[in-house]
Image (cartoon, rainbow, N blue to C red; front, side, top):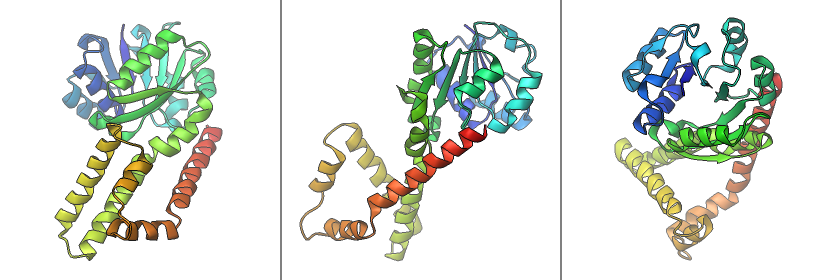
Length: 266
């Protein structure tokens, strides 16, 4: 089975690196192409896989096309795309491109639409995927194998991908913003910039690991560290007064709405 990456940016490079590391495909059966010479060189250096400028000599031999381009580049790609195998599977990680749009462009229902997130680049991704009308369990299993090698993967219906985008797709930015806010707060409290950042990062990593190990629910863990009248209780009172949970609900709703708008535009 031959896998062709169309687009060799950071996410594609991370996915290819995971595939190589886990030996999911024979090295010689993984190909890539990108019009950007900088992306091609970065892809080659990290993965050890050659990356061509054009897909012309590769598309017709590929069993799986992994589409990792900017959504606005789709039209140009389709104009120049050579004929491919009729049974080729198209796996898209392009934000905002619906299965219907991909089906129209590639003239096939053998589509899988994936919403990954950037922690995939360090093997801690959260990816959800939806199947096109002609994608079978074999296509699902292949997609699961690729993305589970880079974190965790879940199968969902396409109508949930906007919500997925709001929670896990955009979610890393929320975490980064919270860590940055803790860093700035720590500096104002007298900590050095470096120590404040390291404490914030390690605290998030440790809290995530406790959740990952299923020690208890988030609510139970929060209660366990909150002594009545203590420092954590004082801090959480401020969060409650600021309607922190309401804020999180509003920001995820905004992300979900924007995802739907981008999908409609495509």
